[in-house]
Amino acid sequence: ETGVTQTPRHLVMGMTNKKSLKCEQHLGHNAMYWYKQSAKKPLELMFVYSLEERVENNSVPSRFSPECPNSSHLFLHLHTLQPEDSALYLCASSPSFPGRVADFGPGTRLTVL
Amino acid sequence: AQSVTQLDSHVSVSEGTPVLLRCNYSSSYSPSLFWYVQHPNKGLQLLLKYTSAATLVKGINGFEAEFKKSETSFHLTKPSAHMSDAAEYFCVVSEAFRDTGRRALTFGSGTRLQVQP
Image 1: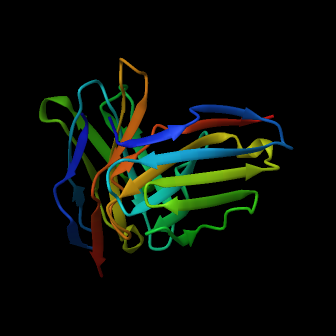
Image 2: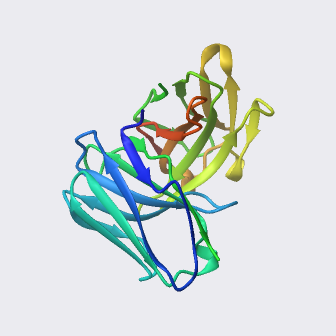
């Protein structure tokens, strides 16, 4: 049990759809992260939230919109995605930021048609 | 449960000398192991990965790592350090749980490599 859960595990959506990815951590951590893992590419950090405030946004297109309502929950809202956005989206949490990335969720496998 | 221990939080070497970054892991099943590098203000970059093929894995930028099951180690080495190698390095274990099929990634705490001229 990693302590970080993500739903859904798999998602297929069209380019005009709006969907959201959810992440929840049960570890009492103060920092949460969204990573994107594309085939044949390294893990890419997308967003970092520390104490519910966004502290990093790595030039991510606006069609990805994060939300952190509290320190245990993190969402990634998706709209008008492109096929190249198909990837594994990983959520992670750590006790603090900056700090080590301690725990990853299992990921959501997203396919954009 | 899986875990990763990077034995050194900081390593300092002189340019042109060998690099050794140590990593030990524990895993209930056969893991996949990775080394990532993170330069300041940059995202994580995959250096190399082990996925149950050859135990000596060669990666980018002259790095390599050897999987030693008997020692539960996956140390990262490079024969000759370059100034551009200065960064933070993360050892990562990925494990698929047989009962659920769920995959989990665990990052080590990181080792900051300094390269002196």
